[in-house]
Length: 155
Image 1 (cartoon, rainbow, N blue to C red):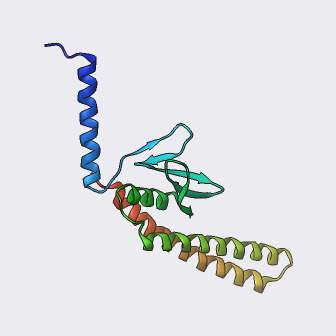
Image 2 (cartoon, rainbow, N blue to C red):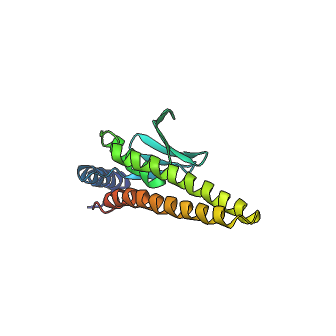
């Protein structure tokens, strides 16, 4: 018996649907890249605008944002696509990641300015502040990455 193109296509469609349903049961919605470069996760679209990420609905209205890290945006969009509320702790860590990144940048700028003015004490203190902000920023990123990696390991 010869399989027709239509019959073969229907079998692939059915297989794809069951695979997507199996992943959804495990807590993962299969993402798709759109023509404009944004990522669609279920009915939600992850868009980058002005150095921040936003999770939009199909009408392109922001649902969640601004988000600092792409990993956070992916996890939030996945949670929303599964019908769950976004994880408050994850959003909190993303917010603090942004604060600490800004603090690090400001402290480095002050240190550079102090170095040009030959103010060694101020430069040294600012570099210390920058290193503290960097370690805190990395702490928040590590917690976000842990949640993202957990999502990526769903198979």
